[in-house]
Image (cartoon, rainbow, N blue to C red; front, side):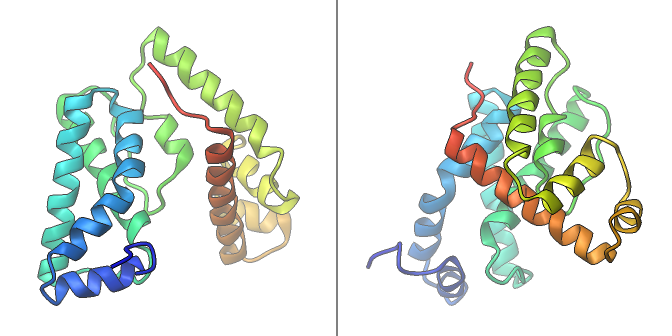
Length: 194
Protein backbone atom coordinates (compact mmCIF):
# COMPACT_ATOMS: atom_id res chain seq x y z
CA UNK A 1 0.00 0.00 0.00
CA UNK A 2 1.53 3.28 -1.12
CA UNK A 3 0.47 5.78 1.53
CA UNK A 4 1.31 8.76 -0.72
CA UNK A 5 -1.48 7.84 -3.14
CA UNK A 6 -4.20 7.61 -0.49
CA UNK A 7 -5.60 11.00 0.53
CA UNK A 8 -5.84 12.12 4.16
CA UNK A 9 -9.62 12.06 3.78
CA UNK A 10 -9.62 8.42 2.66
CA UNK A 11 -7.23 7.41 5.47
CA UNK A 12 -9.52 9.08 8.03
CA UNK A 13 -12.53 7.26 6.54
CA UNK A 14 -10.63 3.95 6.82
CA UNK A 15 -9.62 4.70 10.44
CA UNK A 16 -13.20 5.55 11.41
CA UNK A 17 -14.25 2.27 9.73
CA UNK A 18 -11.86 0.41 12.06
CA UNK A 19 -8.54 0.26 10.19
CA UNK A 20 -6.06 1.45 12.84
CA UNK A 21 -3.04 1.29 10.51
CA UNK A 22 -4.54 4.21 8.53
CA UNK A 23 -3.99 6.56 11.45
CA UNK A 24 -0.36 5.49 11.72
CA UNK A 25 0.16 6.37 8.03
CA UNK A 26 -1.45 9.78 8.47
CA UNK A 27 0.57 10.56 11.63
CA UNK A 28 3.81 9.54 9.90
CA UNK A 29 2.88 11.69 6.91
CA UNK A 30 2.44 14.88 8.96
CA UNK A 31 4.40 14.39 12.18
CA UNK A 32 7.51 16.32 11.08
CA UNK A 33 5.54 19.40 10.08
CA UNK A 34 3.38 19.38 13.23
CA UNK A 35 6.26 18.64 15.62
CA UNK A 36 8.44 21.36 13.99
CA UNK A 37 5.61 23.85 14.41
CA UNK A 38 5.17 23.00 18.12
CA UNK A 39 8.93 23.03 18.69
CA UNK A 40 9.22 26.43 16.96
CA UNK A 41 7.01 27.97 19.63
CA UNK A 42 7.73 26.05 22.85
CA UNK A 43 11.45 25.48 22.21
CA UNK A 44 11.57 22.53 24.60
CA UNK A 45 11.83 19.01 23.15
CA UNK A 46 10.11 17.22 26.04
CA UNK A 47 7.28 19.75 26.16
CA UNK A 48 6.92 19.63 22.36
CA UNK A 49 6.67 15.82 22.50
CA UNK A 50 3.99 16.05 25.23
CA UNK A 51 1.95 18.57 23.23
CA UNK A 52 2.40 16.49 20.05
CA UNK A 53 1.07 13.40 21.89
CA UNK A 54 -1.82 15.35 23.41
CA UNK A 55 -2.66 16.68 19.94
CA UNK A 56 -3.04 13.19 18.53
CA UNK A 57 -4.97 11.94 21.58
CA UNK A 58 -7.43 14.75 20.86
CA UNK A 59 -7.42 13.88 17.14
CA UNK A 60 -8.15 10.20 17.87
CA UNK A 61 -10.91 11.04 20.38
CA UNK A 62 -12.54 13.46 17.92
CA UNK A 63 -12.38 10.93 15.07
CA UNK A 64 -13.76 8.13 17.26
CA UNK A 65 -16.60 10.29 18.55
CA UNK A 66 -17.66 11.05 14.97
CA UNK A 67 -17.25 14.79 15.53
CA UNK A 68 -14.72 15.31 12.71
CA UNK A 69 -16.17 17.23 9.77
CA UNK A 70 -13.17 19.10 8.30
CA UNK A 71 -13.54 17.52 4.87
CA UNK A 72 -10.17 17.49 3.10
CA UNK A 73 -8.56 19.87 5.59
CA UNK A 74 -6.95 17.43 8.00
CA UNK A 75 -3.55 19.13 8.44
CA UNK A 76 -4.89 22.67 9.15
CA UNK A 77 -7.35 21.10 11.63
CA UNK A 78 -4.54 19.23 13.47
CA UNK A 79 -2.40 22.40 13.42
CA UNK A 80 -5.26 24.31 15.09
CA UNK A 81 -5.54 21.63 17.80
CA UNK A 82 -1.77 21.81 18.44
CA UNK A 83 -1.91 25.64 18.38
CA UNK A 84 -4.73 25.70 20.96
CA UNK A 85 -2.95 23.19 23.21
CA UNK A 86 0.19 25.38 23.12
CA UNK A 87 -1.87 28.45 24.05
CA UNK A 88 -3.53 26.49 26.88
CA UNK A 89 -0.10 25.46 28.17
CA UNK A 90 1.20 29.05 28.14
CA UNK A 91 -1.95 30.33 29.84
CA UNK A 92 -1.72 27.73 32.61
CA UNK A 93 1.99 28.34 33.18
CA UNK A 94 1.43 32.14 33.07
CA UNK A 95 4.34 32.49 30.68
CA UNK A 96 2.41 34.62 28.24
CA UNK A 97 -0.50 37.06 28.21
CA UNK A 98 -3.97 35.87 27.23
CA UNK A 99 -4.27 35.26 23.49
CA UNK A 100 -7.60 34.81 21.74
CA UNK A 101 -7.93 31.52 19.89
CA UNK A 102 -8.12 32.11 16.17
CA UNK A 103 -9.92 29.94 13.64
CA UNK A 104 -7.05 30.32 11.22
CA UNK A 105 -3.61 28.89 11.91
CA UNK A 106 -2.09 32.36 11.74
CA UNK A 107 1.59 32.80 11.05
CA UNK A 108 1.78 36.23 12.65
CA UNK A 109 -0.02 35.11 15.80
CA UNK A 110 2.52 32.29 16.04
CA UNK A 111 5.38 34.80 16.01
CA UNK A 112 3.68 36.68 18.86
CA UNK A 113 3.77 33.61 21.13
CA UNK A 114 7.50 33.72 21.84
CA UNK A 115 8.61 34.38 25.40
CA UNK A 116 9.63 37.93 26.03
CA UNK A 117 13.37 37.50 26.56
CA UNK A 118 16.08 39.54 24.84
CA UNK A 119 17.34 36.52 22.91
CA UNK A 120 13.83 35.62 21.76
CA UNK A 121 13.10 39.23 20.81
CA UNK A 122 16.16 39.24 18.54
CA UNK A 123 15.14 35.91 16.96
CA UNK A 124 11.51 37.02 16.57
CA UNK A 125 12.57 40.34 15.02
CA UNK A 126 14.78 38.44 12.56
CA UNK A 127 11.87 36.20 11.57
CA UNK A 128 9.60 39.25 11.26
CA UNK A 129 12.19 40.90 8.97
CA UNK A 130 12.45 37.72 6.87
CA UNK A 131 8.66 37.45 6.67
CA UNK A 132 8.31 41.17 5.83
CA UNK A 133 10.82 40.67 3.01
CA UNK A 134 8.82 37.69 1.67
CA UNK A 135 5.53 39.64 1.84
CA UNK A 136 6.86 41.72 -1.08
CA UNK A 137 6.76 38.62 -3.31
CA UNK A 138 2.98 38.23 -2.88
CA UNK A 139 0.49 39.40 -5.54
CA UNK A 140 -0.48 43.05 -4.91
CA UNK A 141 -4.05 42.43 -3.74
CA UNK A 142 -2.87 39.79 -1.21
CA UNK A 143 0.08 41.94 -0.09
CA UNK A 144 -2.19 44.97 0.47
CA UNK A 145 -4.70 43.04 2.63
CA UNK A 146 -1.93 41.42 4.67
CA UNK A 147 -0.17 44.74 5.31
CA UNK A 148 -3.42 46.50 6.28
CA UNK A 149 -4.35 43.68 8.65
CA UNK A 150 -1.01 43.02 10.34
CA UNK A 151 0.99 46.21 9.99
CA UNK A 152 -1.82 48.80 10.12
CA UNK A 153 -4.09 46.79 12.46
CA UNK A 154 -7.19 47.40 10.29
CA UNK A 155 -10.32 45.26 10.64
CA UNK A 156 -11.52 43.19 7.66
CA UNK A 157 -14.53 45.55 7.45
CA UNK A 158 -12.14 48.53 7.12
CA UNK A 159 -9.98 46.65 4.59
CA UNK A 160 -13.08 45.74 2.54
CA UNK A 161 -14.22 49.38 2.48
CA UNK A 162 -10.76 50.72 1.62
CA UNK A 163 -10.15 48.23 -1.20
CA UNK A 164 -13.75 48.32 -2.52
CA UNK A 165 -14.43 44.58 -2.14
CA UNK A 166 -16.71 42.45 0.06
CA UNK A 167 -15.54 41.27 3.50
CA UNK A 168 -15.53 37.69 2.15
CA UNK A 169 -13.20 38.70 -0.69
CA UNK A 170 -10.89 40.46 1.78
CA UNK A 171 -10.88 37.36 4.01
CA UNK A 172 -10.21 35.16 0.98
CA UNK A 173 -7.26 37.32 -0.09
CA UNK A 174 -5.87 37.14 3.43
CA UNK A 175 -6.21 33.36 3.47
CA UNK A 176 -4.39 33.04 0.12
CA UNK A 177 -1.73 35.51 1.30
CA UNK A 178 -1.00 33.31 4.35
CA UNK A 179 -0.98 30.13 2.23
CA UNK A 180 1.45 31.71 -0.25
CA UNK A 181 3.58 33.16 2.53
CA UNK A 182 3.91 29.75 4.17
CA UNK A 183 4.98 28.30 0.79
CA UNK A 184 7.61 31.04 0.43
CA UNK A 185 8.85 30.44 3.99
CA UNK A 186 9.15 26.72 3.23
CA UNK A 187 11.01 27.45 -0.03
CA UNK A 188 13.40 29.88 1.68
CA UNK A 189 13.75 27.49 4.64
CA UNK A 190 13.13 30.10 7.34
CA UNK A 191 13.13 28.13 10.57
CA UNK A 192 14.12 28.88 14.11
CA UNK A 193 17.32 27.09 15.14
CA UNK A 194 18.74 27.22 18.63
